[in-house]
Image 1 (cartoon, rainbow, N blue to C red):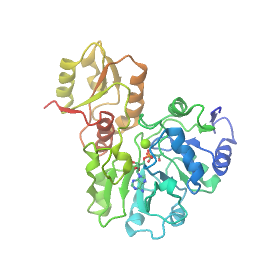
Image 2: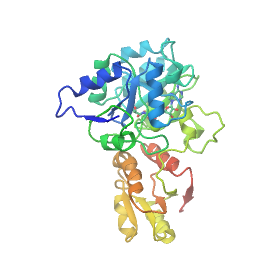
Image 3: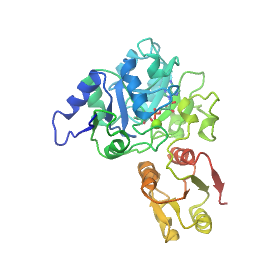
Length: 342
Ligand code: TXA
Ligand code: MG
């Protein structure tokens, strides 16, 4: 199958074409402010199965359902929890997914057989307009091949999905760059399952107590039960093995310099690049610019696959604010192989 790039800047029918494909049970690459998604009609189990096939995604990993306005939540969730309204008032549209009880309209393919569903109202105008035109909730995981770094440009999506889906919609580089924050409202206390564009500090400021799932900080075994099934898989990984070096930027730069081999690649902060002369370097923003780090981290992890590197050392922000999400993605790319540089 030929994969078309639909560009609303040059083709006024691009978004309508994308919506028509969704209504016809097809899969479309869609820009959002976090990462590009692979969308399909969330109510159509057969359409959703095509997403899993295109990604090579394990069947037990549920999808996030995207809506165009808050009222659509009532089409998916029989009993909207009070905390969902608080969160929506504060963070929707935006990079936040809420796990809530689901109704019978959502097929088991979308929710991987769970009795809950993840719902998000994205901020990207192109995503919202496609969902509105389609008149359907759109199930969409990140548009990468399973295990690869997420896609933050239409070119990333074409790289992973060319020939597998009928179309990708051009929407520019994603402004957030890491996937949405996932919070479960299915238990007594709200629980953070995946850090993202809305920070833990922001969630606690409006909800009070928020628990943090242990899968954020450690590798969970294949057979183990986790709250967000997606958190147990090796993820975001370039082909070469990654090691994260934690500590102050000057200390981690010195550690990496001392331990690098001839074909070592380095993922580093802009202000540390000077320490790595002669090595293959990908920079992902200044050490004090978490927003840039989030925007760039997946693009730079992907870039290593075009370089001849035997292994990769990565610098990493600490867990404050948006740093929790950036650090989580880098640690997962490393399969939690972590060194403390003091
Ligand atoms: O920013 C994002 O969230 C992007 C864009 C496209 O919206 N989507 C995305 O989807 O990152 P995906 O499939 O790559 O990640 C969804 C995560 C997985 O870890 C999955 O296990 C978890 O959310 N999840 C989805 N539904 C869930 C549910 N009902 N219960 C627990 N975890 C759920
Ligand atoms: Mg993903």
